[in-house]
Length: 157
Image (cartoon, rainbow, N blue to C red):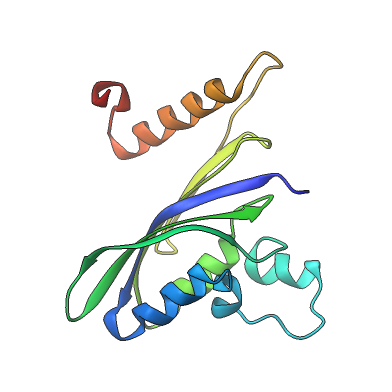
């Protein structure tokens, strides 16, 4: 059983392709949509082409903005061990993808990160002590996200 990496964010796609992207995500075929695995592919091929060794485990896909030209999807899914960086890059290179903003957190490996449109890739490793519990790790991650986005979640409570 892998450590699950939580991935979430927004993908804006041309309206003409929104349903196929949404269906691939909801059906757990998202990485194969981006870079189809050849028959008999191995975990090595998947790591090299997707950045993770298994297809996604979808959690949520919803439309947050929509017009005649584009659809913005709010997505979240899990991947085995790490975020699918290579797949994000391949997705960004597709003509019908207009914007990608993704975040990732893998608590067991103590890292979190941000990826936007192929140009920004920042990952933050943090040191955890034996005394850290899930709440401490989550707070560390939220502080990093708040710093990145210029927000303060403590004021929102």
